[in-house]
Image (cartoon, rainbow over all chains, first blue to last red; front, top):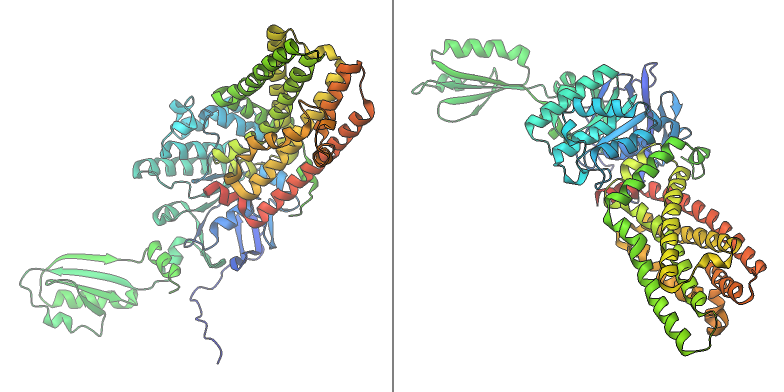
Length: 325
Length: 274
C-alpha cells in the first residue's frame, strides 16, 4: 500500500521570471550527507524590496543565505543577482552586496572605527571617514568609535555589524537574525534606523528573523520555508488569512445566566473560558460575526468585556513548523 | 561554483591595503604579536650565543659563532614566516571574523599578498633586531657572509616558512581550532631535520634521507659552506629555491582546494558558530 503524503494547504506562489527581480534563485539543492537541507528552493526578490525569509530552525534559511554569500557551495540550482550568474561572477557581485548576521563578528582587538575602515577598504568604499561617521551617527553609536569591539555589549555589537552591512551602500543586503539579543528599546531603534537607511538608499533586503512582529513590520513580502522548500511567498496580511478562524472572548457581568448563550452552537463553536466568560471560535468570521453579536446582545446579559483575536504571523509560523499547514 | 575560478585571482590594491591595515592594527593592538617578534628569537639567540662562547673558549673549532648564531638568526626567520601565516588566519577564527571575511569580495591572492607583506615586514624587523643584538652581545654580524648569500638564504627560508604556514592553514580550515597548536609546533618538528646547528652528514642515514628533501636543510648546509669557504654552493641552493617556489605554488593551490571543500561541506559557517 502506498504511503499517504499529506498535501500542504500552501501552494507556491512564485513568479518564475520577473523583469524587476534583483535576486533570482531557482531549484537550489544542498545535501549534507543524509540530510537534505535544500530541496529545490526557488524564489525572487524584487529590486528595493524588504523581503523576509521565515521558517523553523533547520528549514534551510541560513543555508540559503550562506550560499548567497559564497560561504557554502550548492549541489545544484542557479542564482542570478543583478542579472548575472552568481557562480561565474561571485567576486564582482559580492562587491555590490553585504551581510549583517547576529552570530558573527569582526576583529575583537580592533576598535569599531578600525574594523569599519578595514571593511570599507575591502569593499572599495570611497570617502570612508565621512561614510563611517554618518553610519555611526545613524545607528547612535558615535561614542563607541574608539572602543574595541571585544568590549562592546551584544546590542552595541549588533549595531556595529549593521554599520558594516551598509558601509558599501549595498544594492542587496542580507540580514540574518541581525536583531537577535537586543532589548525591546534598542531593537525598536535599530528597526527604525534600518528602515530609514533602507528607504533612503533603496536597498534590497533579504531578512531572516524569528521575531514575527519584526518581520511583519519590516517586510513587504515573506517567504515561508520548510524542509528546504518554499511553501508560500506572499504579504504578511495574506499569509495570516491562511488561518481563517477568529476567536471572540466575551466576559459577562457576574451572576449572568449563560445557559441560553451556550445553546448558540449553530452560530459558532463555543469553548468555556471561566465562570462568566465564553470563547466563540468563528471559522468563517465574515458570515458568523454579525449573527453572533446580535444573539449576545439579545440574550439580555450585560457584557463587561469583549476581545477579538485574529491569527498572527506567529500562529501561522507555529502551524507551519508543526506541519499543520 | 567551480574549484578554479579566474575571479579568485583578482587583485585590488585597496582590498590588500585594508587587509594590511587590519594586520598592522592587530600587531600593535595585541601585545602577543609584538612580543613574538622579539621573545623567542632573543631566547634562542642568548641560548646559542652563550653555547657558542663556551665552545669557542674550550675547543679549537673555528667559525663556531657563525655556525650557531648564523643558524639561530636564520632559523628565527623561517619560524617567524611560518607562524605568521598560521596566526593571522587563526586571528579570524578566534574573533569569528571568518564569516564576514569570506563573505566579502576578498580573493585568495589578496589575502595571501597581504599576509605575505605584513609577514615580510615582521620578518625584516625581527631579523634586523636579532642581528643587532648578536652584534652587540657577540660581535657577530650575519651580513658579513655577503648580500647575495643572505638574499638567497632568506628567500628560501621565507618561502618555505610560508609553505608550511599555508599547509597548517589548510588543516585549520579542515579541522578547525582543535588543531591550532600546529601553528606554533610544526616548526619545532621540522627543526631537527633541517640541520640548523649540525651538518647533514653527522646524522643517521634515515634522517639524512628526510633532511635532504627539506629546502631549509640546504640553506643551513649552504651557510656552513659559505662560512668555511667564503663561497656559495649554488647547485643545491638553486635546487632548493626552485623546489620551494614549486611547493609555494602547490600550497596555494592546495589551500584553494581546501577552501572549496570547506565550502562544499559547509565548514566555514560551522567553525564560525562553534
